Structures are given as C-alpha cells and as structure tokens.
Length: 295
Length: 236
Image (cartoon, each protein chain N blue to C red):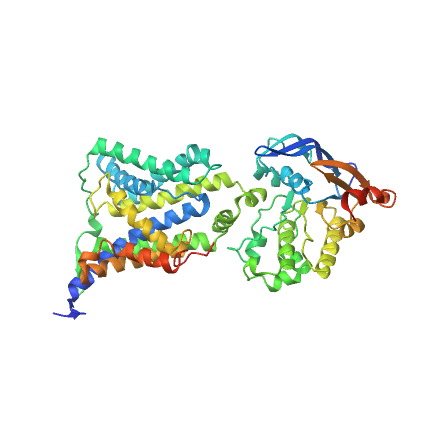
C-alpha cells in the first residue's frame, strides 16, 4: 500500500477530499458574509439559517412540487435570496442609522426564530435528500475512490467563487459595490441608488448561502440545526481571512478546509479546534486577517 | 443661453445634523452659466450648504429648486440626475478603484458630458496614471480626478468644495484655468473657497457666510467698494 508521511494514501486523499468539500462550503459561506459585511457593515448571524433554508427549499421543492436538484440549484437561491432582500428592505434598513451591533443582534434573533420554526415543523432529526442520479456513483482514481457528487461540489463551488470574484472585482456593477463599500454617501450623490444596491447585495449574499445549502443537501442531512453548527467555523474563517476581502474569503475557506482535513489524518483529536488555533495565531500576528487591510 | 434662467434657487434653507442647527435660513440664487463662490471662515456653513443641496445632511427645511424642480423632499440619488455634480471637500477618491475606474464610476446624468479623451486632454497626468490606484496619486492629481470624474457625467451644475485646499500654487493655477474653461463651456459652478485670491478673478459673484447665514452678496464689480466688508468677514 502506498504511504504518504506514514499514512495510507487512500486515507490521506480521502481526508484531503473531505477537507476540500468542507472548504468549499466555508468559502461559499464566508464569501457571502464578506460581501454583506463590506457594504452593510453588518455581521450576518442569520447566514447559517439562510444556508439551512436553501437546503430545506431544495428538499421541499423536490418532495412537494417534484422539482429536481438541478432546478433547485437555481430556484432555492432565488427564493431564499428574495426573502433576504425583503429582510433587508423591511427590517435591517430600519436600523442602518444606529450602531451596527444591532444588525448583528437582529440577524441573530432572526436565525433563532427561523431555526425554531423549522424545528417545530420538521423536528430536529435530519431529512434525506437524494444525490441526483446524474452524479450518483463514483470513480476509482487509483489512489482513492471519489464519489462524483463530492467532486462536483468542489468544482462548482470553486467556479461560483471565481465567478463572484470576477463580478465584484472586474465589472462595473462590482465597481459600484466596491465604491459603495468605501463611501455610500458619495455614491448616492453621484446618482446611484444605494439603498437598492444594499438590498440587492444582502439578497445576493443570502442567495450564496442558500446555494451552499442546496449543494449540502445530498451529503449532509437536511436539518434545522445544520447551519448553526457550520456558522461558528465560518466566522473563524472570516476572521482569519480578514473581514471584507473577497479573495481572502475564498482562499481562506478552501485552505482551512484542507488544514482541517489533514489534521484529521495526523492528529484527529485536534481536528475540531485547529481552525480556532489558526484564528488565534492570525489574530496575534496579523489582527486585520491574512488578506485584510489594516484599518 | 439666457442669463436669466435660474439654475439653482434656495429659499429659507435650514439644515440640521442631529440636534445641531447648522444653517439658519439661507437664500441663494444662481443663474445658468454663473460662477458663484461661497466665502467664509471654517465652520460658517459653506460645506453644509453644498451638502444640503445634495441632501447629504441629517434634515433640511425650506426650498431648493434645481432646474425648475423642487428637491427638498428628493432622495439623494435623484438629485445628481437633475444635472448636479458634487466634488466633496475630502475628494472621495475610491481606493479600491484605479484612476480610470474612478473616472468611469459616476453614471451619466445628462447628455453632453466630456468624453474620456477630452478629459485626458484636459488632465494629461490622469492619462499617464490611469491604471494606478486612485489614492496613490498626489493631492493635486487626486483633486483633478475628483473634478474630472463629474465632468464626464454631463452635469451642468457643479458644486465644488474647497478644491484648492492644501495644493501647490502651480496646481491651483491649473485649476483656475480649468474652471475658466468650464465656465466658457456654459457650466454653472458653485464654489466653496477659502482662498479669496483664487476666487476673486474667476467668479461672477460671491456670497459671504457666517454662523450658518449669508451675510453679504458681493458682485464682481463691487470687490473694491466692499473691500472693508470682505476684510471683516474673511480677514483678507
């Protein structure tokens, strides 16, 4: 059997793949958080609940309307993103003039309400969502067995992350977003409808969370608490990458997934805490985060 | 172009930041094609007057008519669309955008704005540094960028806040030439200015401000006769 640093190759690559998959979710979620924080200056504590809503939207679409995975991949983010836009328009906008900490509290409260509601309706135990038939099965790569669906998650997450990065860093609309992040009052004085931009941005960040939720549905159980568990790690990832940096969120997300996966191979006891250790180190050495700008 | 067309008419404007009452009943009128300055000491309310026109202050009452439209209830992003270009005192160059992105950022609000080529002709430095990050420019270049940015949009009324502040004399001279060119093109300009020597040769009229009120209006041909008043309020 091939060994890598004293570990069987199959185990090594298996954990590496698991790490990449977790990293893909960290990247998608921290990307949405970073976009929202950039323009709204709000730490969106409802992000985990919105990720869960995405998974549930896919689950409900399939079971009640017979809408398949591929359609849900577009529809669920659209539906949940619209809910997000409404949350911004009718709740968050009312508190923009006061301390941003209230935005954190409001979204935290919303997350509790949404999770409570879904626990009430569907119970705490998870619901199964089938892997789409096109992606069932897998392939033996020689050094490991890779299920197609897991490869798909990593690939599509990277594609979406790069597309979002391109949208924000290289297009006119993204220019509005970047400039609005710096100086919204001046943007409005130039004739740009900043309140609308804020609503759409929040909706977009939420849609990204819902997209991640749909991706997660076939491999994790669709449960009301699925996002809350993930969100704590994602916040650590955002702190490591640096608040508000788009590329930082993507790279750090994937990297932390891999770090976590490899820790599982070499020192499994630390795998749940390694990201937080990295966070502490980064905060000590570069308080603004690896990709963040010093204030 | 008729000299009597009133581009900006402000009547009994009061402005507030939270509990502070900053402007106490401003009356100010500018005809199309005029270059008018707001002179006064720091804190006299000149910048607040510009920001009030843009609806960037906490609260305002009174009347502000721009190109025949009452705007006291108008949202900030609709005001630019009436043909107003605002250049803030802090210049507001975006550090996440390069020079060209900064130039192209403000949306077109009217037809007839300057093209990118015309702007680069007017400010050759900006062409040379078009790929640099906006905030890496020198103070003078940043000021030119802030001004150039609103010339592209087609705005026919410019609100310029302290554009010569802290700049070298050679750049101040360049800005005076640019303003003269813009005036010849028929643009209406309201200029908040600290330097009376910069403002005097190029402006048609001056409003003197103190404690959030307009205390005196001085026309170009009255500069000599009202010298004492100017001295009192500006200490020139």
